[in-house]
Length: 370
Image (cartoon, rainbow, N blue to C red; front, side, top):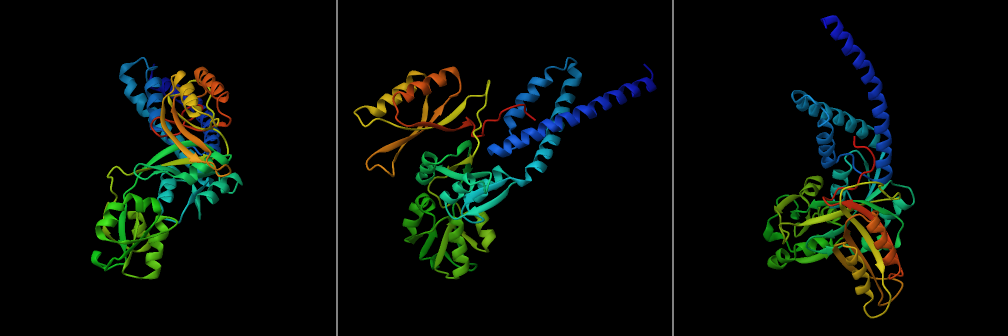
């Protein structure tokens, strides 16, 4: 084959690839719409690695295989940029003001979304139910302070689905007006969870405590009021946002302080076919009889499912009655999972699967990887 013939082959291949590129990007558009509706993030590194490994194995010439890996990665990067462009209109509700940890988490999960502040967990949740926002990012648990009961209650009573659970490392800091000394501080403001996370530090310094709706509001108030005897416990990002100085870094008791955030959507991400082992969120009530909870636990165990989390919460409309929140490892849509859910329905008066997420904390994704 001479130079002219080789160039003609390349021209023909490029022509075919141009058509295939448009076809591929239309499929990516559909994936972006699917993710937007369900509150799923664009990037999934583990899925990309699996796809690259599987598809590069199809290249028979070993000299070309590493170049094909680069080709696939570049193609995926272009697809992700296209999705970022398409996802700019995603409206993300969070509780608090700019600089709150929920704001930080929402920005990291949805870097292209439009973040919308709401004054409470309930109002952020309802914003999605009413269609004002596409998704809500709300905390469900802190590694040292425990579950966020208000959000679990919204899961129990509301209609939204959880399509992802994400970890955010939390580093609390003592923030004060510029020029303030640690010895000047008499009172600290913060959210009750942050106060709980820093209880030893607060006790050691003899600070009085005032609770606020969230950490960023505490910082905002310190900056606005101008009282040098009052400090806020909040994030480093919040200090920069409100012009405060950090008097002390990382004051939380646990140095592995992590908050888990859930992404709530109106649409369930019900994946069909094979998927990686992850976990599903289960809410249920039990009969008011001896061994009622034990029966439910035994059903889950009998089908070889492991509960990594089990919590009880009081029911608002029934005194001294409780519902249970469980995070169960495995796939509830598998044949074994469906049998387990069916058996649970015979034991539990109330039961619903509220969402699913992967074992690594990323949400499950359906369809073809981009």
